[in-house]
Image 1 (cartoon, one colour):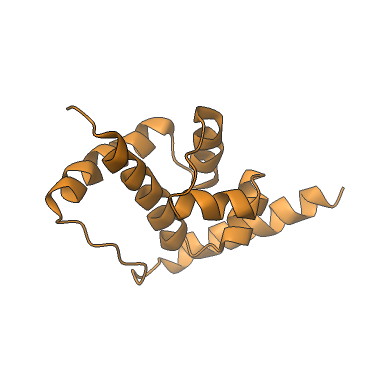
Image 2: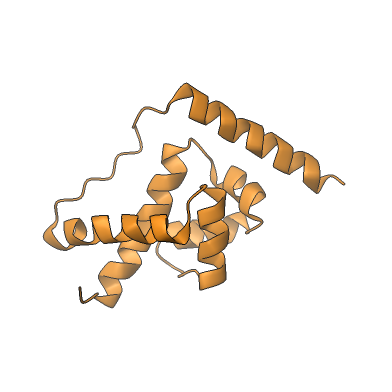
Length: 115
């Protein structure tokens, strides 16, 4: 597949935005988990900045995704964006168990930062 630079930027933005919303995280929560500033996360999600490969790794780790899983999602969404068939919805229901695990993870990450 040949990637259009602008479309690829949009897909990366949407994958991270959708991943954050799926997990019920705020930008501040993600900042705590990933150790990336909330401002930078906002800029990535807003399409103003592109993450480096190290930042991609940190964000993927925060979402409990491998880079392979992350780029598989990019490959899944890319053709949908190109054809205009992708609809972003942050109102997807979360599994209570998954949400609870993520909240525990955030709580523990906050506690680690205090030491």
